Image 1 (cartoon, helix red, strand yellow):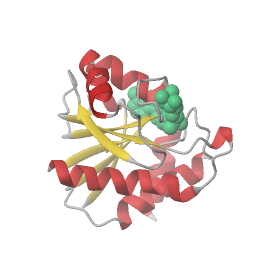
Image 2 (spheres, rainbow, N blue to C red):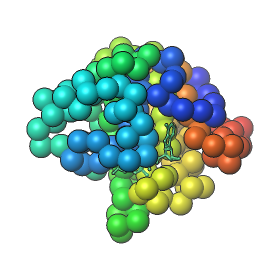
Image 3 (cartoon, rainbow, N blue to C red):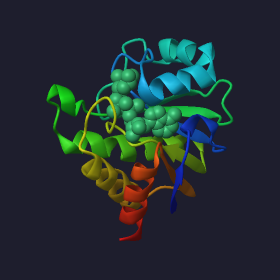
Image 4 (cartoon, rainbow, N blue to C red):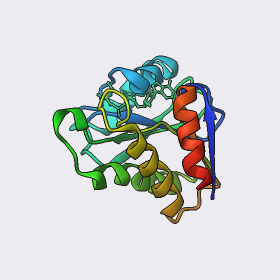
Length: 165
Ligand code: AR6
């Protein structure tokens, strides 16, 4: 698998699946979750309600349609809320490994990832970058390209440096 990094908006990525940093309720929210629901349109929420009537557990992943986005699927993951005291790192790394497993089930060859838990959920940025890069690299998968989409220059440079290590 090729691990790439770009700076930009995940909702505009021309990939098979985009990963969403959702919450356990799976009914939308702020950050990248809000951007994905806005870009995908109401179909994304309708599919969330249909497929996840009881939401999704922290550390787990599940898919819906991507609605109007260029991607075909959204793979939703729920990262641990560091700001609320959830500090179990295995719940963060499992977001990436479970997302790749769901991508494999779907047959998605290209998958775009945000930095899960690194925004509203307050996971320290350096470790959020390390968890993303190291887990994506270390997980066996049929995915051909995992693309980390950095929302700003600083995140881009941190991810690039970790990928180059
Ligand atoms: N494209 C790429 N990255 C983005 C985008 C975008 N359009 N928008 C934000 N980011 P966050 P979390 C980056 O807060 O910390 C929501 O309310 C952002 O800069 O989206 O896992 C959910 O519903 C950061 O690097 O997710 C949950 O309640 C990264 O995406 C909660 O926030 C993740 O930031 C989840 O918090």
